Amino acid sequence: MSPIKLIVIAILLYIGYRLLTSGKGKDKEKTDSASTDQSAGPVVDVLVEDPVCHKLVPKQQAIRLQHKEDIVYFCSESCCNRFVSQEGEKKE
Ligand SMILES: [Zn+2]
View 1: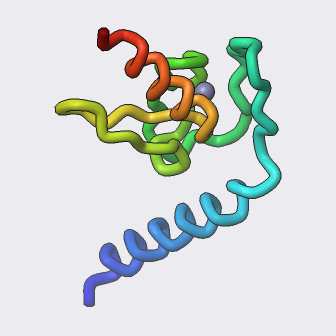
View 2: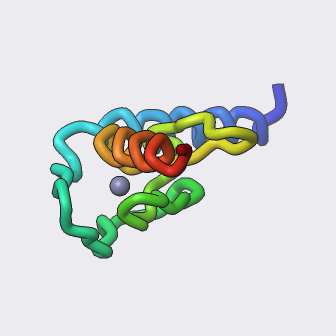
């Protein structure tokens, strides 16, 4: 096995470990205010925008929803639920 492969595997393990350890106890969601402040810290992932509160969230940590042809990402399940109910209201 080449050393480069080992380094890549080590980096992937590190990122996975970081996601596991940083996921808990983070970001107590505010129900109604559209806060734009983003959590500071090293960015190790692609940021995606939550269409409900317009917060940027790392793709790996985002709540995913298959919406028509697309996958939509949310910062929390409450935003996901709000999006689903809004979409439901649009259809008449
Ligand atoms: Zn949100």
